[in-house]
Image 1 (cartoon, rainbow, N blue to C red):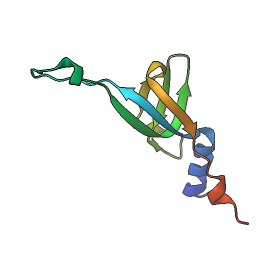
Image 2: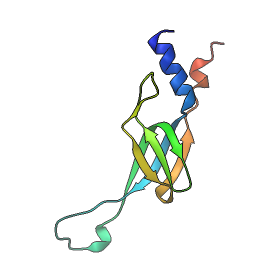
Image 3: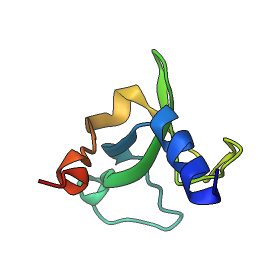
Length: 94
């Protein structure tokens, strides 16, 4: 089997997802109005490595031997939305 096909098999193990989530922020300086301080909205795209009661773990890189890298651990309480990317449209040869 060639290396590209090996990666295809690894990708089948982990679904590709998009997660929108609330990110904590901080400011080390003085502020005039605390009401102006707020969280940020972040978007992560990658392979869903783990999904449990507290967190999702998303990887931005995979290797053919099932290695994962660039892990983001996102608290479920901070997730606004999460969905799986559907590539079937691109794989449809009709």
